[in-house]
Image (tube, rainbow, N blue to C red; front, side, top):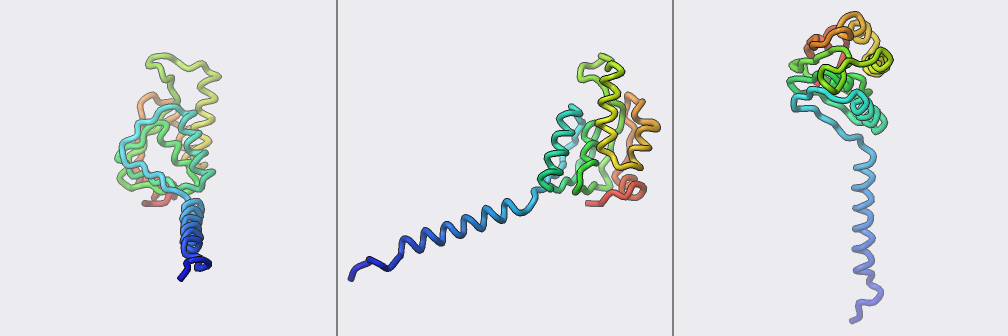
Length: 155
């Protein structure tokens, strides 16, 4: 008997293609979760702003579960799909130069403050602008405070 016309290899290829398509669609259709589990002490305001924008554009969920989220890490609080752990400590302070001891020019500082504050919901922004924005050392809030006082979602 001949194998011709049975479609054996063709059917296998079509099925493999269909399965691959379903996997790709499933992967593409669901946003990723970015979980911050390790202490994050911050860094470049510009870099964190770009990360938050990327996660928001992709529809990613951001979960802050680390013991410490300090400085620019707090910009993740501007994520559209966010939850925070009650145990996380969030450190807020005014913008500083990456070079220790170097003072920002007033125009640089104003721009940095604007970028930072834009990542906080209105009520938290008011609190930040009333005090921590002028601090060099962090002013700490717990995740519990953000959840209870500022209505952030709990992880």
